Image 1 (cartoon, rainbow, N blue to C red):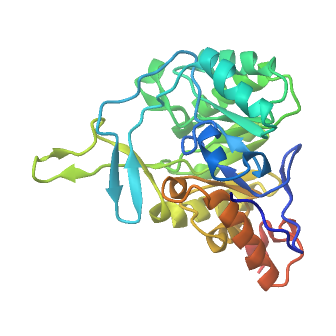
Image 2: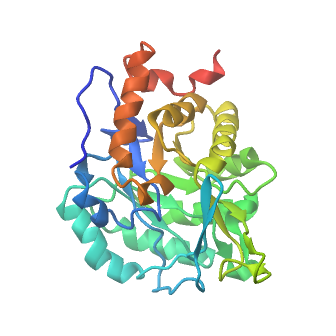
Length: 314
């Protein structure tokens, strides 16, 4: 079983009012609701489990094939497949609560009102540590434009969620890298009331099967994740932290080692989510936290908090 190794470095951190005992969280969509990871380690010892994005109704997802390998990464075209909010509350969330897992629920909607309804339902559920608002999904009322790619629609979603989220638990907006100016989007969601941001989501990509002369994925395009996107994620986090230094950032995007996680922290992230690497190494969230502690210790730091955003001061 994987777990955290005791060490002299303080790895505790926070996202707004949410205190985290560990700096590594699961990334939404890469560990479902955490139940599958339980055979590999103590899930309650993770910083938090960020659930797969939940929608109001059950969703079948996109056509197959849904995944394709790429150099230093992978494309996925899952399409937010999921059981819907009722089944999630009954089966997944109940398991997380019973096992004392710090839980951040990721929500997604087809329109602004759906985001609000999900937040209203979840606001009544005790024990939820926070919301991650996946605005990196298409708005069916705006010809499929992604909410996160427009500062106006991004702000509308966050305003609606925050208006019904009567809780001190943080609300994190998940930002897309597929924009001209990610700092502009960050400013818009902060003004709308968000506690912090999760960044980055996947980059839109495509692989073509040249034998069949057609896109390899059933949905044609997919989200690129893995080490290939890490420099993009570090750059985006660095820019947002430079513009809004007090904004809590949950960083993600191709983290496979503690050394990579340290890059994100130095750029301005307060904690990191571990995603694609979990498919091949389910123990990665625990391993990376241990490696991060070793990286900090080797450089003479006593705590993770003293390194947050440190790359901006050297």
